Length: 318
Image 1: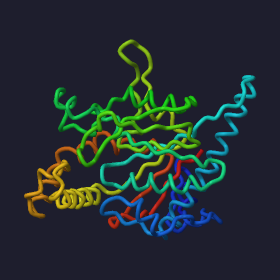
Image 2: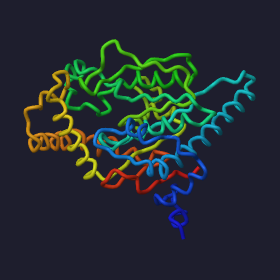
Image 3: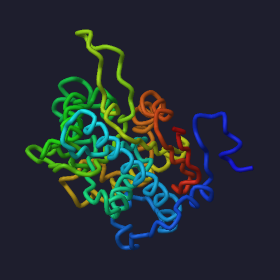
Image 4: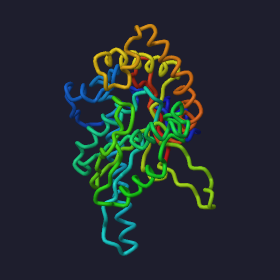
């Protein structure tokens, strides 16, 4: 009996890595080792085998979803007597700080762009919609950076709505992980993509019931056609975060422009202690209060082990 059969009463289908890998079918591996190296995040390792066993089946599934969604839009336009319009497929990717969602997003962008019916795939991170540090300081939110209230959610929703509606070009602010702030005057432009990937901590949050004026709230997840949550045990994520924090401190010793240069005098043990403190007081709290509770809203969950490898996949039933 397979894992899927054992959980028939669940709204989800559960796959081991081996079970999931068989759903790749004949999907070709188009990434080289050099290309994959450019997509990996800091202190992360994703092998070509994992791309073949985990991410290629996901790209095949999403290709089928895109085709079905495009056909549905054509049917709706025919019913309404409208000329067929291009409607981008929006994929949301959520998960904790340091869990590897950015690497997942970049790999999926590269794989999805290889399918002939949706070659233009754009990736936008919600970091660009954080309020600038000056605003966060004014509002007393600098230690809440990454929490829902630290984002310009109206601007984020407006951006996704405009892309989804087929606007010819839409811009998003740009965030720099070097200066740890929004880059003044710099914009990322999106030009009618076939697929738009939105990656961020809180993209799967559900809207509150009503706004102050009685109107229903709208959140970015309302525009998603499919969503992925990258998951791992908090102890693993904390360890990955601390390791990345130490690496960023060490790498910033000769870079005065880096936000982490201020910690350059710390030795590795002190940097690890500080990284652990930041996790415990900020990122871990955000994970438990705001991010992890949205996991069950995802269409698909990638479950990682201590070595960063995806060991199980959970897919929501239609």
